[in-house]
Amino acid sequence: MLSPFAKTLEDLSPEDPYYQKGYAVYLSLITMRDMHAYFIDNIHKYVSDTIGPWRLLSVGCGNGQLDLDLLDIISQRFPLLDIEYVGLEPNRCRLDLFKKNISLYPSVSRYHFQLEQIDLDGYENRKNSEKFNLILCVRVLYYMHDKLESTFMRLINRLTVKGKLLAVHQSPSGIVQIIHAAGLEQQSPIQSCNTFHLRQALEKLVSQMPSLHFSITYLDNYVDISCLKNINSNDESERENALSLFSFFLNKKLTGIDRELVEKTAIECILSLVAFRKAGNTDSCLMFQPIGIVSLELQS
Image (cartoon, rainbow, N blue to C red; front, side, top):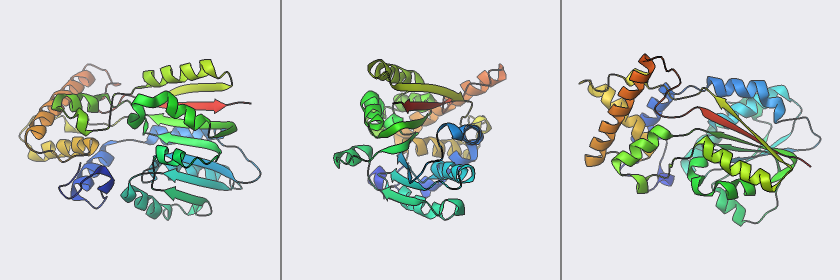
């Protein structure tokens, strides 16, 4: 949701009031409990004690919210592990916020952090040959929807022997529906990229590389917007909260006809969701399909 003072998404600041309002609504609705529990139960599958530095690359690390949680879990399970963390994030403001957030996790202060204001393409253009024990690709695959196979291949080439790639993906079907209805396809980078597309791309790679193994685990994580079920009422605050949330995901400030179209579509989506849940379908959700945890391993 860009304010009038932010020309591009890269200029979007956490201090921007439009960003703050949308992000606050988002945080009030999302639940990360299942994802956190997954990492606690399965971290041993991705990390092991090793002599020397253990290297982690995070593509699109954002403000570090999930990465720092994961590193905190690793520090407790593997207290002797020496980690070199490389985070790629093109948004300067989010990267600055990551640096501030590190201080909130004393357990990870001994790790070496290399935070770069750059995307994967820019990093690859450096033509370095750095290898990593673990590569994180968390909630960024929407931006690579048209080049999944080549993206995975580039990341695979960055893995050490027995290195692993962990991709966390949510299918933003509800957001895509809103984007199409409002005619905003050219203004938003978010596209329909679900776990079916991921599986197709991975299966094609596996057919070419017998040493490649992958699995997809589905979590019941989603953005719960049931509290906005009264959006069709005259409650202006409810309507504003909903619009702030959708604007946050669209990364633009809604005005004029855009606002009317998105509001109409949002109301229809929410009312449909409420109807689904009243019918006993607890799996339905507007914003996201269940999370897909893609575990990919390169074996010798």
